[in-house]
Image (cartoon, rainbow, N blue to C red; front, side, top):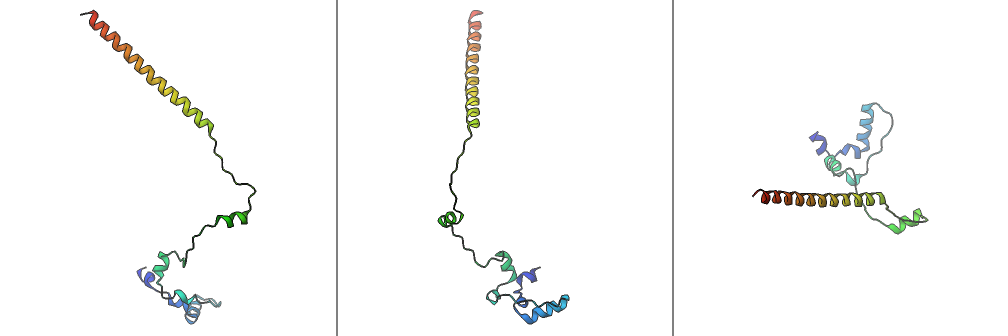
Length: 119
């Protein structure tokens, strides 16, 4: 595997070598050689670069909209159920804490009153 990665695959750039490969695999078709501009690059480098020679990343939204020509472009997000449920459960949580505080306060008052009553 290391030998394949370090190879420059020069045979694929030479028509005579490609004809020999075609003869060896038993086909009569002629194979066209690859472009010589990348013949010095190793196969491992091509794999590492995902066989991409150049990558041009540019966004032109005006061209996109002129090509697609949408009649309207809008975005809306409405999730009122979540808002109502969140408000409802928040109210229940606050109500629960209030009840806990009141019950704790009443229990402490009863405990102190019993403590002072039996004293």
